[in-house]
Image 1 (tube, rainbow, N blue to C red):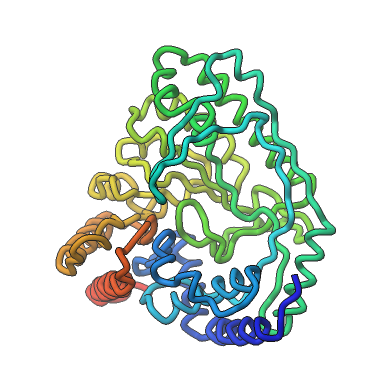
Image 2 (image 1 turned 135 degrees about the vertical axis):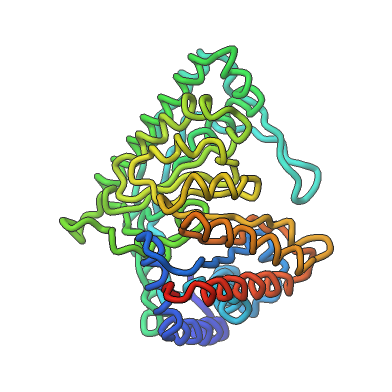
Length: 420
């Protein structure tokens, strides 16, 4: 992956700008604030912005200036950090580390999912089940992990030569641990089929979950045996949003040469179970996820599924620290239930960035969650994500974050003595 002189100049100039921002006092303060927040100490509500699908409108790939495709990808990664810093009033951390992912191969589950794509560019795909009967479960295989050390070293050498005197170039192993058993299985069995199986084939569904649980236990063990686990008490994206900064990890007896699950964050979710009862959620998925999460030092749960009526079960997850409160959740119910027991990881509705942007509506919507969380002593973070489009109005992100920032600081000012 050699870079032309033209591309090197662009990339190194961007890297210097990122490095300069990363050492600003405000960025250092953000890291400290996230640490207190994740350790359940009182700080003001924190704000994160992940434009996700809308990035193609905020920072179109076609606007990149580098010549090679590899260089353009790196350029985009640097420019996205700069865009966040220059546009959003938020608590996103701009880090001066450039991660080089270790080359890790996974053999998969023995059966490939079959999906029919939509005829629309961004449309939803359709499930085509490949598991039809209980006998088909015998087609499943436990995944095996292989680490390509030579390919990893080659990648690292290239990036170290490009950025090593500007950024902290680092080989990164498996830092984001998140279990998605139901997503794996519904991709093979079909979503409607799994819903029916809870009534018609419960033993088949339990057998499938047991197999996937064991397979994930084996995956973690392979990562451990190959020494591929990576500390994630930093700006690693955790759960369905949130940073991992904490003084509680790694554990006191941590060996820097060998990361263990107990030194890390991990999470799980089951969005496919959004509409089933709390009891079914517990029986068919959470019981399996709970055992997978148990070895980890701190855990999180949930994504876009509404957990309003399921929090009693979720709070029994070992070391639970961050719980996703989706746009579809009842924030009043969740605030009363959570209080300060775990981070109230609120996902505001991304639909407010499409149609007619209404600042007053956004203000009232955010203010309500801030107020109800303050009333119940919740540790609140608001994470603007799942934004598939802003309808080519990038300024809406700026407006949204300006409103949230102002409300957060107005609330802080009204509660004198609270750490900011």
